[in-house]
Image (cartoon, rainbow, N blue to C red; front, top):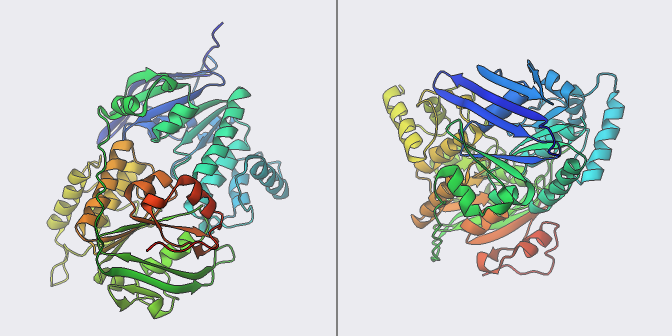
Length: 505
């Protein structure tokens, strides 16, 4: 006998002023089923998940839970049914601790001490290391991801919704998470899984619904598909192959020598004698498990932390360790942070005005802003990087995560930097957009730009990097040529096991 669906969606429709996010969507999820929802950035996946979780109200359609119609007016009502969700953009309060954030979504009769105990037990059970006492604002993106996952698991869900849960996790952490999810499914928990990583969907999921432009365009068993066939279902084509031509790099553009910094918070990571260089016309990648000093290094490179000795960071030959972001941009350094909303973009501002965070092209000699020129620049980036948005005046927060990422990366690439420092360049973007962004990075390199990529996706680093380093516990490994790097070796180095290794020439 076939089990009855735990969740059914019938004709779900959600309209916004500039777009129909969901258009008559139907979907069924069985008990114990791991069901993928696949689609391009802006296809309507996240909106649909928020409707199921009660944080967005549909304009039409019905939600059935165990065969009975339900109206989910808020996430609290969804959690009462047993629905839990891990958001792509984290729903955490920065000023509260990990334990306090988790406490907000649990039974009010629990004490904070009991919540701390449960977090520690769940973290140990599933190998998701997290400190309950840490304020959220001190966490890296990867650590915030772990908090969201643990918070969802503590509710003992009957339906678990995961929106890009592995986008900033290492391969080892992904394997641990998959063990957790398979165990949950075996216990009867239903899982809705959104990811742009096609190999993950094929390895984990036993059903798949494909969305395009807010509509269901197909269903399949992903275990019977290839990456290429899933890509064709999602975007109508296979992503283009990247051309990575070997070339001789030029002079050093970024030089870091003896960079030692004490942590700026009790929960940060000390940097110890970090040294490397990035030359014109090359891409250098830095791999590592989240929370091993990436945040501190990036702040020191971008100019947000100016405590370093002047000569510890050189940009275009100038001692820039004490320069702020604006002076470093004047030397040709542009920066893409890992946090899209709040650091890479101001959520409430239009896309055109967000250009002003790092660009001054539209400011005349008199100091007045040329609004037409600003809008034209934003429109050109939207067109060039295929950003799905309601135009240059659309608020940054109105975009899907992947489309906002494309705009921010496009903003910095369009500035024609001499040095681009970019963190998590394809976090949450679909396979087609990821290939485009990586292709743009290689084009920048071929045009003579020096590029530093900090990422927790090894596949990405192997695709774009000429040389690789690994950061672990605030220390940087020797340089390794891409041709000499393997997943196994990089994995060992992520634990700090590179003693006795020598830097590549």
